[in-house]
Image 1 (cartoon, each protein chain N blue to C red):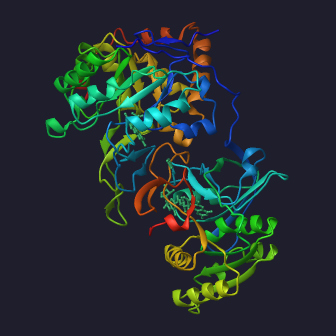
Image 2 (image 1 turned 135 degrees about the vertical axis):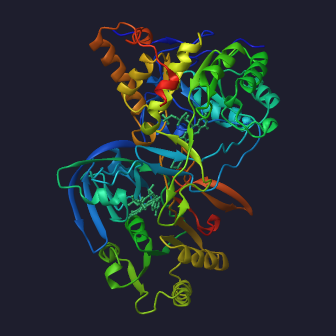
Image 3 (image 1 turned 60 degrees about the vertical axis):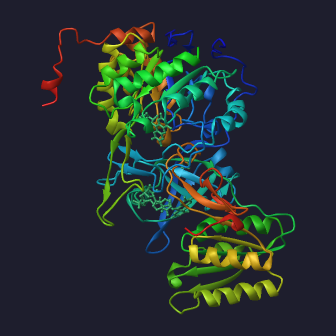
Length: 313
Length: 282
Ligand SMILES: Cc1cc2nc3c(=O)[nH]c(=O)nc-3n(C[C@H](O)[C@H](O)[C@H](O)COP(=O)(O)OP(=O)(O)OC[C@H]3O[C@@H](n4cnc5c(N)ncnc54)[C@H](O)[C@@H]3O)c2cc1C
Ligand SMILES: Cc1cc2nc3c(=O)[nH]c(=O)nc-3n(C[C@H](O)[C@H](O)[C@H](O)COP(=O)(O)O)c2cc1C
Ligand code: FES
């Protein structure tokens, strides 16, 4: 038997390291697959206030991936607690609620409202615009990351994860700021800003002009960032970006991730998460690992000293 | 502050039972029905074959050469038979996804996720309905004619197309005993004024206590206006670009008019069939 369980800190132990990425999972998946085998369930980001979301088209296909400019349509936290949370209470997998807010105080207010039974942890989507800082995403800079995470840490004892944006120059520094402010884990990463143009209509393919790239095309970038963050912090790093198969997940675990999130892949293969879980067991068995956590330290790179500047040329 | 509430609170109430499946379906036939449309017949036993009129599937289209569709493509159920386990789609070969679908040969497999969404309903009071569609919208409506027939509801089908070659599935409608009226761009009969006259005549004859439409914004708006004026119940099947088909990504939203308020709904989850009274122009 391979032990797939992982400890993500603050008493949160998952039966296996696989969970959905926020915004790519909702109640509808329970019509098709058994959610009880999944390590944790992560909700679409919710906000305190009601929000509408962006213009259509909200998605576009690109080579081996997609762009989205969904935005964060939200019916608010009260609606979530009353109407959505009861649905998730029927599953054994712990529920992680993703929240977002436009200011540091609003992040704290939102986090404080989630201390209720049935919520096992908070994922703070700090990849969103901070209206007090010129609309720059909190997670673009260590300082604003630290402010937002500290404010939430003060009001909650729940496991608190910070979801980082790849749209930053030094993601390791941002991860360290989240750790210093008391985050229990970092999720690496949200989508990377991108665009595409329809050359027939000569218009941007997204109603919002720009949007986030996800799916296999994004994987090498998010994997690199996972590796950098895992070397920079002592809290668990949850890898996310382009994971569609168990092999992809293994790459992330070898890069130092403690767990992984599967996003876009679920749109094209609804059973992707269960397939990743089955494949992880298979890989560990084949390679002789008794515990999936052994993968985290198994990368053969001790002799290699990466030079980021060289690598970027 | 409370202590964290970690994991495993309650065990699952019921063993898992799926409402939709990602079926690996085997191609029985995939043939042209005219210059633009193909009919694909699949062996897809189980949940897939239980699809009801108006429900759809999200289909994984093969990668062929330069055509690399990343998303699945939504297609209405053209036919589903739980006894034979067969599911059919009638599709227009348009872009990368449907071009790929068109290359599938007998015996190959294709993944179809479904049945998805909310299909058509026939309220108790409805005795005689008008089904009006255009282009591939008629594919969506054909199973409704059969459902109405099984329920003893009379059907008049008003079928709109560019020319005689583009009128699809007339025999499907006729086989259910539906009265078929064809209106064409080529002879001017598809003109809105003429279609309105036909609908008013059907209503006056007591043959229209339900309106059902798909495939044309113009025809939908006409039916909506008449339904409002004459107090007729109505439903419309909508299209919108989709990714997940399961209500998870929120890309497929459209605006609806619910009691005077503009409400954004997901076509894949709240629809694709909506009350005609709520529909807005697309
Ligand atoms: C619920 C539903 C049922 C449908 N049923 C049928 C059917 O029975 N037969 C049929 O021929 N067509 C049907 N369509 C339309 C069909 O999904 C599109 O024609 C198809 O997605 C086009 O894909 P493509 O790769 O050939 O075209 P492309 O233009 O290359 O597609 C590019 C992108 O736009 C999307 N797209 C393009 N046209 C449409 C459209 N009309 N509706 C939604 N998304 C679109 C594609 O899915 C893809 O994401 C239905 C659409 C919906 C939403
Ligand atoms: C349609 C869509 C909606 C998303 N919505 C959210 C969201 O609400 N909150 C969030 O933190 N991330 C959101 N994401 C980002 C994903 O959680 C994930 O970080 C990203 O897609 C990369 O993973 P993937 O390549 O496996 O999809 C969204 C992604 C997609 C494709
Ligand atoms: S297609 Fe994803 S929500 Fe409708």
